[in-house]
Image 1 (spheres, rainbow, N blue to C red):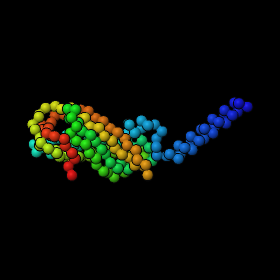
Image 2 (image 1 turned 180 degrees about the horizontal axis):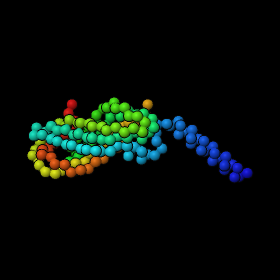
Image 3 (image 1 turned 45 degrees about the vertical axis):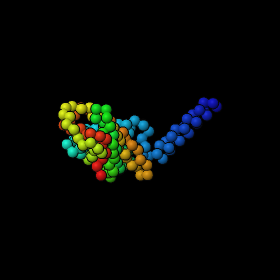
Length: 165
């Protein structure tokens, strides 16, 4: 009798899990699915004498779900030699098929708030962290990314910079 209840309970639990998975639909069970959804292919940072600059990110974004999604925005935090240089966000509307992968290039114009730029040629440690937001119907999920590399920069901003308006 006891083993019969255990089998019945296991069967009901399995049926409930399958029902819930169908209800969730767009959300992969593995939380790591979103951690692995964005790959940074290239980073380019440039500043000019007047303090203006640009951050260009080339990303590869994979939909971890079998349902179609829309890439709604990309946010970033840029640090050079450990110092925060810029943060920002760009709104997008890029469709992404279920289990599909798209190359994505985003360019963030930067403007220094104060101090202009100063010559500082040589190699600098550049760290970019951020995320790509995927919208599935009425819900959104953020897929994070992080990249650290050494880049040659001719000019450095004098103060904290922000995305240009």
